[in-house]
Amino acid sequence: MSQVVVRELRDGEELLLRGVFYSSVHDLAATHYTPHQLSAWAPENIDGQSWTARMRSRRTFVAEKAGEIAGYCALRQDGYLDHFYVSGPHARHGVGTALIEHLDRVARASGLTALQSDVSLCAEPFFKHHGFSVLERRTVVVRGVTMANKRMQKDLGGSS
Image (tube, rainbow, N blue to C red; front, side, top):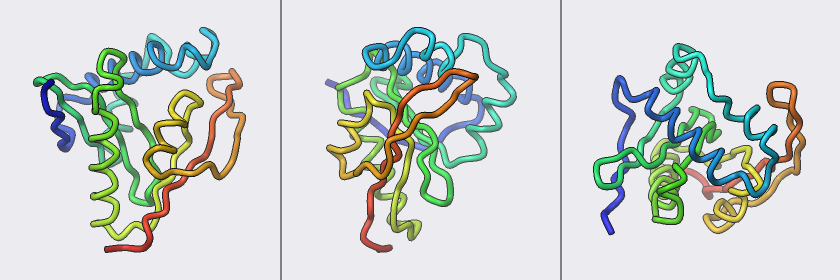
């Protein structure tokens, strides 16, 4: 089993993350959401410029395994975890754990006191395992389609 390496996003990789996002949603969340919900959440067609700008507007980290992008996450300055996705083929192989542990170190080094995210139903057990707790059960509307998620938070116990 190869090691997972977490690093900063490199120029030109933004659209590669789109593939990870699509795979994660459609491969891993299918047991918790309908096909209609999955298509609203991660449609086949996107605006590449908007996607690239969004990835560039956050601190985005990429997880590589055997030289392949296997997952990524995007952290805002306020400690909100905007994206956290692992591609379907790489799920349950340590990629998410490597990303969340990296995020924890970065957040603490940045002086953040908490991490917060809106988490899908399928990702909730992973986040709970890594110290997050549910703040609120929510129903959100994405591209006109309603779906459930959870607002979760991990307290970091102050800056270090």
